[in-house]
Amino acid sequence: MGLRTKAPITPSTRGEERGTRSLAELAAAQGITGPQDFDALFGAGTDLWDDDQDFEAFLASLRESRRTEG
Image (cartoon, rainbow, N blue to C red; front, top):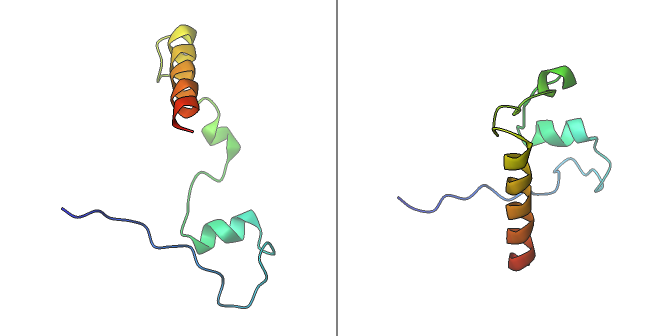
């Protein structure tokens, strides 16, 4: 199976200047969908870690990996 990459993001063909579209317009142009209601996101993922210590360990690991990669 070959490596699949996303198509590059290209400037609008409607002649719009960079930075003139809203976030919603940019998302729609890229086909991004998601919850439209913040309350639908609130609390999402709370069951990913057993407790706060597990979550803090995850964050520490993430920070360390970013520090050593960059």
